[in-house]
Length: 465
Picture 1 (cartoon, rainbow, N blue to C red):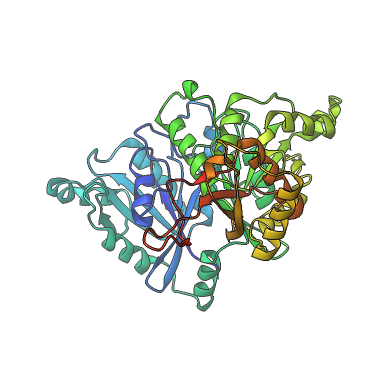
Picture 2 (spheres, rainbow, N blue to C red):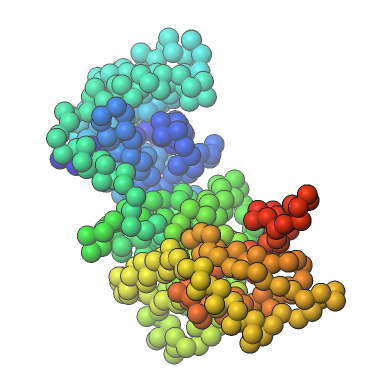
């Protein structure tokens, strides 16, 4: 038996997403006073004692979506209902019973599944006292909660565990499988409507997230776990980003923040482009975030079947990307058609390859031989009447590969020579397609003996471009 699922169900704005975040003790779903923020199914694996279960946040039943995506949202809700082992029916204790609450209750009755009635927003004793009135909606156990007041979280978890189907011997193993680190975490980023969600669904072989021609359909960062060649991966579908001055509300701003957080947390970033659109300022801002975080990146040109019909070639698009993003000229480029899943497996294999590169280490001896040869071929020029000197080099970290160069004065090395040395490293070391971080640090001396120390000066640290 797989890990049981608990679907969080209710009308809009009763606090479903807040409850998910509260139970998970981390911000997973976007929370905003605007009704209908949640559109896709947002999931989180919970462990309470020995039991595992998956929380599934769904869109509000009965929402009138501003982008007319009611049918797509309804499909996601229906999948959540049908796949759930327990329904957590959430209502607003402050507003009392509404006609839409009654509609939700009528929809749950025919399902014949266990229900837990959660009267949320019981921030005062009076509201909690009036909570039993909601029992006319469903004949089910009742728990009152207050996310703001942090009240009854333990009681809610205990009630969920009590109502869940009996534990299966395989449940612990299934739950641990879901908590183990995946082979790779991939963040899909890009501006709005470039096909990120469509590609996620192709990887998962399921309509896991809503896809639409409406820009900005995805609002949450959604982790989708999938398997390929018997290995587990996580793909993070991020909200599409547009120019900062065009961000209309807090929901879009939070989507921008989520995209940048996903870049920081990912093992590899898949930077999506629409093959029929020119590179925009938003694309450049996202690439800047990738560069700042030294995250391995693959440029993914989507909708390639349409580009081929228009007479475009891979050579022209590749050259266009190199000219636009010189700082990532080492990044590999993939051409895919998300709608059909074309080249999806090749892209995942490529992602594994460059992630493996970012985790490699090279010996100090090899590094020093390369540095000595580079200096012999092209010595750093004098600056301030002083000769820049490198005493030795060593790799101190991976992901990204980080190389420390111990020198006399970091300020003496100009940007041109640092770029030259970075190019030498890329040619000679197994880091041809991933970012390399270079730190120049001076040799310090003991004030009493004058002998060189091996500590590094943080204030004089200079990072290579």
